[in-house]
Image (cartoon, rainbow, N blue to C red; front, top):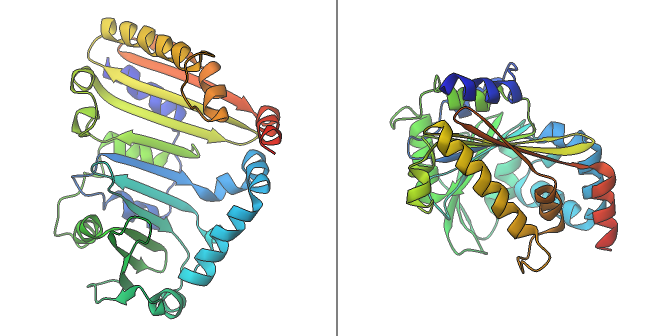
Length: 298
């Protein structure tokens, strides 16, 4: 029944022709990475919903854009796609698809007090720096004029070695990797190889699930879809009932869970279903509802 799950995902993650830089990223996911996601930032920034949110948090958004421009040397609003990947909690590599100008970043970021420019083979620019918030050492590198990556030192080194062809990557013909590169959704996230590879996922539940997908489509509404492939149809039926029950408990007035208003609204409107071995859930929040949530926080 896996074809039913594939049809579900392919129906929501329809194919498009990926850009060259994105194809390079898809071919450079180290085999250790488990959570992998892709954000279509260019499309998100055109969304009425995202514009409402950015207007409500104008100062913070401007600060982020100014930091990217003045402290790093690139224009955030020129970024097309963002890939993010993690092998275990508190680890990450983030890859931006450009355009980028290596010399601009060298002149800006390369001279910062906590930054050391390093010689990374094949990179147009690379630097090691300490993250003031976490105290961890990180590496940032421009692979080419269209690809900027940064992350924890250990995992960035692994990512760069995979990019150089010296470390095994997830195969690009993997159905999960292909769906990530082909998605039309604004955000798509999956666990490559299933949840059992994620260290903090409940072992008993992980044995029952083979794939997990979360996708978000943002235009004038926010549509969230969840899909998981289980071992057999009975497990899928039971999982749907459990997920629905947990959702009702979490959103109850006396639950005491500090859920953000948008998350609470999404969960309250979630609808669950089963197709063979696949468990599905979908929820949507309209632009009007989001505007009301934003007005309530003022």
